[in-house]
Image (cartoon, rainbow, N blue to C red):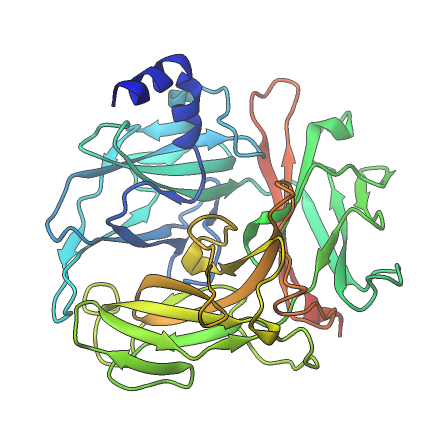
Amino acid sequence: MRYTWLFWLFFPGTKLLAQRLPDHIYNPDIHTVKLFQQNNQSSIALFSLGSSEQLELHFDDMCGYPKNYYYTFVLCNADWSPADVNVFDYIKGFTQNRLSQYRMSTIANTKYVHYQALLPERNCIPSKSGNYLLKVFQDSDTSKLVFTKRMMVVDSRAAVGAAVQQPFDNEILRTHQKLQVVVNTQDLNVLSPQQTRLVILQNNCWDNAIKNIQPTFIRGKNLEYNAEQDCIFPAGKEYRWADLQNFRFLSDRMDKVDKLRTPFDVYIKPDVERNNLRYLFFRDRNGWDEINTTESLNPWWQTDYAWVHFTFAPANNQPYAGKSVYLLGEMTGNQVGDTSRMQYDATKGVYTKSLLLKQGYYSYIYVAKDDRNREAKGDPALTEGNYWETENEYTVLFYFRSFSSRHDELVGITTVNSRNIR
């Protein structure tokens, strides 16, 4: 304990940086954190500035008894670093609010407390556009941080157009997808491209987001992003799925359910490599999860939890040399990190991962990452394969900072599907 105290004394910024990580859970009792547009679980946390649109926040506390949870918003720049703006300048109303709506779980074997809220509330409204970090903490003490979630407020002053194309490079022609983006800045006073930021997300994944790119051409008020190497994504393959909406009956991907302990143990049928299989289109969720049940129950506080065991079998049951395998999807925060990393079982020759999940429908893929390159991104080439025909959803975010502003404003957004080109 003494050495820990000395560490924070001499490196105070380290703790502050850790508490600013987006989409991070700091309390192991917290599960199933979801923030989405009202009545649409498969949507990014985004609403328009000055509108009546709201976001739904849901999460469960597995401790089994109610606690005093509060929340606040932190204005951020395009790179999610805290903006140098006073909190009273971007929040209209109270800077902290208590989460007062909660219910104890009923019917479910696993006991938990479900919290929910509609944001923003009338007494705490973001007054500027941009990126925001929703911070939830305990007992009105910001040092007792529980979790953070990304959310965005857009002030639509720029028209953003995007199209998905097949790359011209023969080496990636059949494996990658390319985006062409045009932004009309007629209503903005853009004096230099350095005032703008463009961010492109594939299937709401921030880990492999494309950012910090400059326009290829400037035609009057139009900024065109069309460089051959700037907006390229590995196409991947359609997401796998696990239907866990009912623990009493086995769905197509469930192998068995062990009900001898609480929470139950659910074993998903082993997954194998798909990089040597021909591409086959089917409708998937692109990594989104949906908390739901096939029975006449409220999915938020009447459904159960289970330890869900995933298994991935590499070719010839041999591990990938110098690489780690990750389970990627909303259930692991769409992040390549400790929460999604799988363990290799040498006795069985498979990678395994166990997650405590609530009843619902989950979609996921496996990606591999080079352990020797810290800057490397997760790539599905070895585990899933890359096929340019794959259906992916891309979100394009356009930020602008005027010379008198102290943060990056989100002034344009569009979403495009790769299958719209066919």
